[in-house]
Length: 499
Image 1 (tube, rainbow, N blue to C red):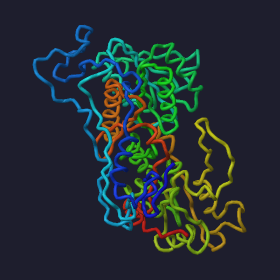
Image 2 (image 1 turned 120 degrees about the vertical axis):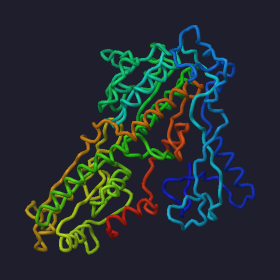
Image 3 (image 1 turned 30 degrees about the vertical axis):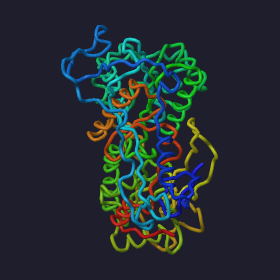
Image 4 (image 1 turned 180 degrees about the vertical axis):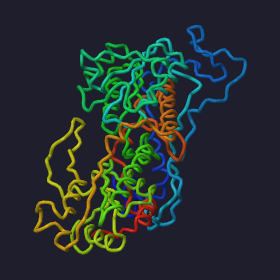
């Protein structure tokens, strides 16, 4: 579908039909980009869909009633709406050379090309009467700090618009098919303090029924707004639901809120839960440091989340300043050999007396036995790289290769292994994520009322935007080994290349 220019970041892809010898290639690319990032609207299927003056206006803060369903009475014009033609610039750095650190170039000359995406926020015209809306919220996948914050803000914003029927679907997509899982009525009173706890008020699960069965359930329940909170797989499901609703000519708005603690959603600055994960990881890292520093030849190992991307491990290593080695999935490494991780650990023990390793869960999978097992979301079940490194280090462990490395060279080590994964996932969101969740939840509702569907909301260059779902789920976002942030991490840890 797309190809990458050799010199550019692995996080950036361009269409493969560009002829750079064409003097008009830039104009054609910008036109094609605009078409790709055009967000679906109800009027695409229902050209005669009626719009109404928005019931969202902060000039009047009393709750909306049916008497005001056509708009708040106000003598003054409110200038708090977003124009449908407002756009946000996707890329802000004008690289002068493909060899610049982290360069993201479309052509070999790094020509500046403007790429604009839709600005998120409330519109002056809405395409649903609040009194006729039945909104449903689901949370899918694994737990992540901030789920309850998003649920809460979606409910509160829906009520400001005047929606009376708000329900939660329990345990993700599974809730659409299980007769024993009843809808949960939601209101401001129900969700008022839910953000003070971690987890999800609605519960989570992976997988679910067929898309056609889900849409059948949506139709039977009379749902015409669906808010889906989840990661790449969940968003793929949301997009399929959106497509099926369109095929059946159902006037349903499907809006996603990207949830991935790994921060691996394309095109977005960050996703909610990530900041909390980095902050909470500091507790584990500090504990590992104290254990290692207090022992003779102590080594602390901390395994953090990151199936295919090492953002949490990289940022946690930068934040704490206590990590000597950071291992992530995007950067290959050797454990053994003259330039391997174990040789560097020997050097650290000789010079510092202790060492701390931070490893992302998806790193070093080549060293582990493949099982071909999949979880309910279709993800490969990973081996435990933290345990593997621990086994390689312990001088008293059983034999895996001739002898354990440090016993071979006569170095005794005291290894402590910490995996805080589930402690981090179950935390409540910190202040930074709380703000992000609040704004994402609000903008998901604004997008649905504006008539958009098959969209997700995210933060891009500090601004909130709407993306068409297919563009953000095309592939996971990963750490660019030539990016300035990874270079900063290497500067902080002082680690060499382990190849």
